Image (tube, rainbow, N blue to C red; front, side, top):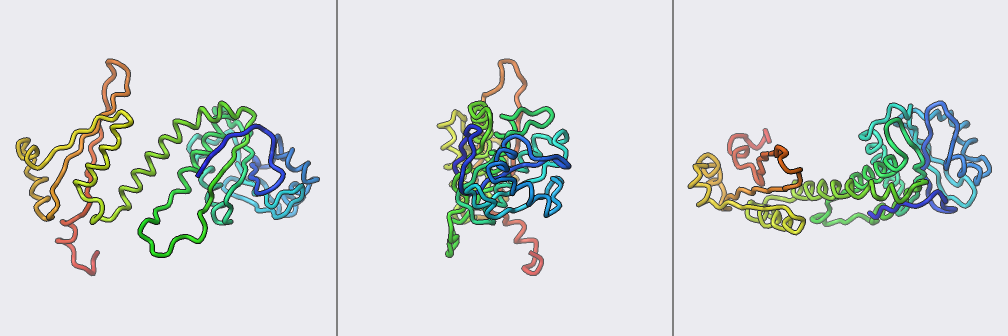
Length: 275
């Protein structure tokens, strides 16, 4: 999905997403959109008794002004929204748009909760949406009928800053999607040697990758790992990745992961009925 950041000029057609604080009236870009629709959005909110409660939303069809659809999401109390809350809100926005089979939409993100700038809010909405639209359909015989949400335009009074804030979040989302792909691959496709081969691609990003073969593991005394690996015709591998991104003299962080591509032990110990 492509995510763009644009100024406060709202679209005159298509699907528009707005936000409403609990117990408050429409403000900013949301109020601007309502005036373009001659008050129809506010009337729909009143008719549905929509208060802006957190985790609630209201779908308004053909509100006027050329728009085909307006979806209003409740914020609850904006002062209580954390970065994670906003990111999850972005995921909810994307999920709702996907369920409506929208291919493109715009989001009025001129909101600045306590401790977050408007640019932060817009970037986090984009990050949550980017994480939400992940799918893994490589091996499905029946492909989805539609490509899903392809483009999201996020409107903010400081689009340039929102774009800058989004870039590192986008990199994190791409890493999350890569990890999800690795988890979802079946073991006949992603076995230890193939996993090691895929990690080599990270060297282009500056990651130092070291791969240990069974002979090297034996010299290091990794007998337990090699013993388990004997249950498979595939050779074991250990992948060591280093990212020297900290400041000079800063203590490093080390993560040790058990990258099991196929759990032979689980199959040996559990009867078929208990799997």
